Length: 317
Image (cartoon, rainbow, N blue to C red; front, side, top):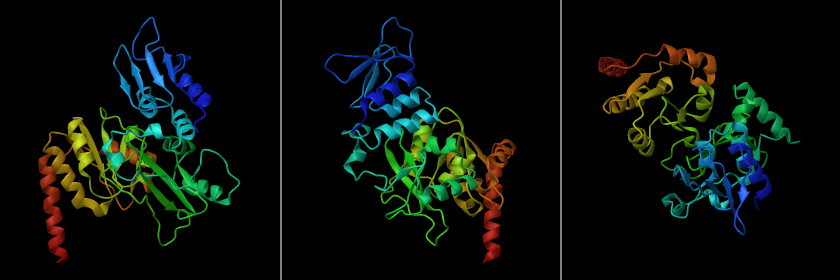
């Protein structure tokens, strides 16, 4: 059960005004932050999560969309995750994805936003701090851990769709076992960290969630070395102007394919030349330097990269 009082109080603070409850309903009316009007015109249903501004026509079907529209803080997103959990209103009945099995966090999942007496909690925090992940990152991305079950001794990094629905999670072993990663059993054609993406700004593509968090920008983890069709379509549909490709050094072939594809769609592409380390190893400051030093790709640069790749393969043969 959702604590409705806590939820309303959080919405009040995030919007910046106190909601007026409509009689015998779960609806609240707020002064709309999207327009200037002499009456409350933003209507929010705290059970279904649907919201609508009757003047600007802005609206959505859950509170995660509203919080994103309001530029909510990391703490506010974390608090919303805590209050809502996996409640039904986060899922649309008419969403085609709901026809498939929903991705769910492990039942043993514990949020790292709160201290726990478990020794795994301390080890998980130490592991994340060593990898350059801050408390602010933990709150923003809703990172947690498991101290029992299938994901024992793993930190869990969730990924949410733009609707605030869990679409994937990564489970990373904190003690460096042979099986470093155990991820969610259902992996779809998803967009990593979609909830936090601003499609009007330059986008950075990287391989994993630790890389994405280290980069600390408008970044999408691919959860691998190739770009999936859903993300490719959305980048083109949203008319993204600039993309930085920051894959590991062993993914040069995949990087070149992305470079060529996006350049063919008149997107400015920047190929970030990593050395032997990936972004999560380099850290925020070094990654920032690399991004600043990266020049926009030309077709002549692409041809040169392709030629170098063919020459290298020929020499290996």
